[in-house]
Image (cartoon, rainbow, N blue to C red; front, side, top):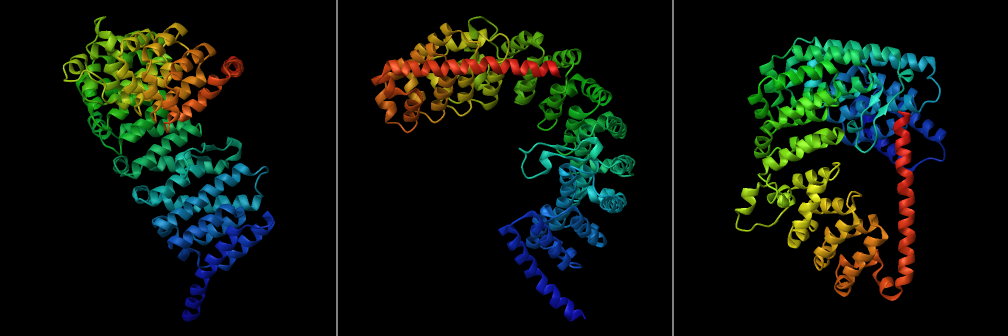
Length: 559
């Protein structure tokens, strides 16, 4: 008998590979595909668990599970029940289980009518059995590199939520099933599982664990997206009560545990956010130590971006501003960036933010303010920049460029415009031809806040420098984007400037695309036709620009 079974096993592996090859070739209709898949899974019956441990065969199973009907998938899932725990902890098997849970969510989402009662009953029974198994080995499952993925898939299935970062493509949106589609027993099991986790005797071990911390962070997010705020609130409050203030600070510095605090600040309820802010603000010296820490500073960033109330943000803003220069010295520019982004929501703080920047970069004097662009783009103080051997921009800091782009969204950009008018042409060319700096120059030249007079002065000032910009990999994109966003008056001016070096541009690998974009040959030979075409383009752009804001505002009112 054993010899017969071994021979059968040896034949089934090639059979599964062949069946998978036929499956990938496609079928004439859906019914044929379903029958084929059902027969394939029946043929490999009693050997499924062995194939789950094989890397190549498990991949075949995953692809076929995704296209099978729910009845076939549940039979397959149930047949693995005797080896669930071993499969969950294996590298290949864990992927098979994750695929099954993903299939359950997508099948419920796409189903237009409720599942037949017998299938629904079978689904609930199998899931309940699996949840019981997980509850008996919570710590081991959540701390295991493979088992933790299975736990996260199970938790999302119970909630009827499939997060985009849990799938292969982050660009795909989250799947959040309508509450009516999620079986009530699923939500009961979800709440019970959440309670069991927080009351587990070794729960604290999970917080600092590389895999356990990801599970807890996901739980906070899933409960928020499922709108189970009461369950989430109890879970977060009990978790914080497990930790003393000192141990909480230590956890914030841990690269694994810190992500939990970030998720709580992003998705937690009001009480938990207040509790965390209280811990952070309790000691000013400690707060700025955290701000300077390579890991904990991300928790501070999340605290800033989660301040969606004017009073709360004002408190956070004032507190952070006390050590603004120290934060810059620690080179954790993300905190400064998040503060700047939040100032867009609360315009009253914008002037104060400008003042803090000027103070921190030692350029509060009116004469020194003209170097504002150079200082921010290089992230150097006025003293450091002008005391160096070469007081010019040699390279652009990424965070400096991003900060300048955000500042361009402020209500008042007079300081930036004035500084750009005083920035040397060589530095402007360096900015425009830099991978990071080019995005700032592009944003500056395409903003609607600049008057035509300012743009005209800037274009004429750069003059022949446009040749170097147009013939650069990044600079050519700046010219093209500016061209698309400009009105006919700016286009007339720009093409006259570019015309002086048209031959040199036409022979350059990047410049030739700029010539094509601005229709240089047509302008040289048929200027009137060029004028007419450009006027039509600008008119259409303006027409759509007038329509889009109305649509957006209508949506806001509807909300």
